[in-house]
Each structure stands twice: as C-alpha cells, then as structure tokens.
Length: 359
Ligand code: PEP
Ligand code: MN
Image 1 (cartoon, helix red, strand yellow):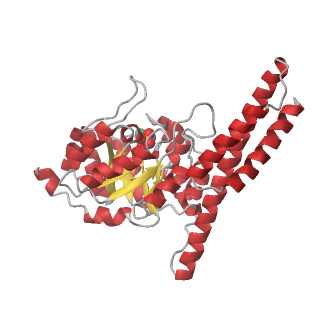
Image 2 (cartoon, helix red, strand yellow):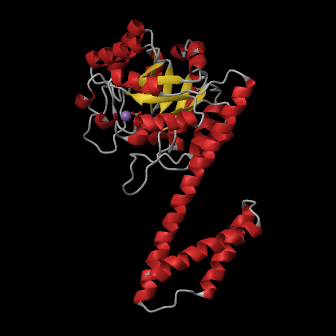
Image 3 (cartoon, helix red, strand yellow):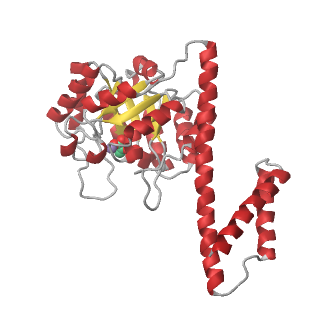
C-alpha cells in the first residue's frame, strides 16, 4: 500500500534507541486547542522526544469518552509541524494502523488491552507488514509475559524490527497503592530475554495518581530502563480521561529535572551501572519475596484459626511431608539444591508454627 511504503521512519528508529527517551502528552486528544496548547508547552521544555496522544480510547466500560477518532490525526500532524516533536498514537485495529500511517504518525503503540489478544495482535501485524514502522508494545493487562513475548514475535515475523516495550503495570485484585501493580520482575525478565529492545516505563498508568510518578520513574531509571512515557495535559483537572494521573507540562519539567540518569560513558562507569542495576533488581526481587512470604503467613494464620475452632492439633506430619515433597520437586525443576530448599522450607515451617501457636 502506498501510504505504508513511504513510511520509513529512520529518525523515529534513532529516537526510540536513545537512553533517556521521553515520551509525553495527553492521555487523549480532546480538541485541537487542547492538543496544540499541551504540545507547545511540552515542546518548550526541550526535554521531550515524542508527543503521545490517544485518538481511539479503549474504555473498560461503555459510555465513557472513546476518543475523537480519525479527525484527531490531522491535529496531531499539525502539532508535529508546529513543534517539531515526533508523534505517537495507540492502535488497536488494522484501520487504526492505516489511518495513523496516512497521517504520518512516527511511532505506533499497542495498548495493554490489545497485547492480551493474539487475534488483535495478528491483525495489527498483518496491517504493519511491509512497512518500516516503529512500534511500542505495552505489557498485557494481566501478568502473563508469554503474551508480551508473543506480540513481539508476531511483529518480528512480519519484518517489524523497530520495537520497544512499555511497562505500564498489571491489573491486580484488591486495593494496592498502585492502579496497576508494577511486578518489576516481569519487565526485568523481558529485558533479559530481549536485551536489544528499549524498555520504557509508564509511571502514569502504574500509579494512577500524580504523587507516585516521580518515585516510579526514578525506580525504573535505577533499574536501567531506557525511557519514560508520562501523561501530561495543560489542564489535568479538566481531562476527559485519566485526569488523576496527568500532570501539567510544567510539573513534568520539574519531575524530569529531578530524575537522575546514570552515566554510561566510561567502561568502568558501564560496569558500575550494570552492577548497580543488578543490585537494584535483587532489592526489588527480595521485596517481592518478603511480601509473598508474608502473604503465605497470613494464610497459615487463617489455617491456625480454623484448627483452633475445630480443636485440631497444629502440627500435622502428613501435611508437612506433602509440603516438603512438593517444594523439593519444584526446586528440582528450577535448579535449586535440595539442601537449600530443605533449609528454606524448615525456616518457613518454624515461622508458621510460631504464628499458629500465638493464636
Ligand atoms: C494510555 O496510554 O492512555 C492507555 C490507554 O494505556 P494502557 O493501554 O496502558 O491502559
Ligand atoms: Mn491514559
């Protein structure tokens, strides 16, 4: 198709491979005025590489603002011409791809609600085939890294090479401090599997609020992410979507000023950074482990309560043996030594008994 073949985005290619890449813009395009106002304030920060803006909005429930649709693409093109910023929109169907490319959008991103669906991903891949489009893939809403990997593979299979990953957190049940829990171990694993693909953090959709943005952004940078995508609106309180998490371009400028990107100039510096980043990963994994162990103890406590009510003894040897057996089998699969697993399970068991005794 003609509109596609001319879309050879060498500049966009260079852009997503830049350490310290910043993508910013409103959650949604709401009007020409809102987009141009926000874009010009963002451009004057002189820190933004790509202007993001949702034209078609996937809403969890019907009846909400679903985006301005294709007409917004001409405003985005105007914003690009006026500010010199590259542009990015979310695509979910073949028609979106076709429309976006015909309006010279530089980067397409696939949303979290689309990455979960291999049918949709395949449809996008077919529409992108033969183009040189730069595509960013958000993590799927559910913590299933295989779907994320599958989306990368489907795009690579049709010849798309400029691919970046966006970590926007995962849906979880119950209240957490996050709108979408980060589960850092998943993007870290993706980085290990795809060391050449840029990894971009989306603190806006992880936090769902304005106050947590800086901490999540800095955490991501400390974990050696390559870039940030942050939602910004000239008047966040009036935003039609995601108003609680959007910040003004001015606030974004202040946030970005505070972020410390580590230098990777000398080889010694590179070594130190790598080491620090791996240590950060260990810290986060340890935190996850502790919180998992704590959840396990809460369940043990509930069991303790039930045992108390029905006057059953705390220690039940058959069950303990079963637990150990399962753990040893699992340990074998993941190449942990039997000795380690025994010691670990014993420590867990002692703590469980302590908790149940206390009831
Ligand atoms: C968005 O970027 O505005 C968006 C809809 O994001 P996600 O797909 O991460 O929910
Ligand atoms: Mn949003």
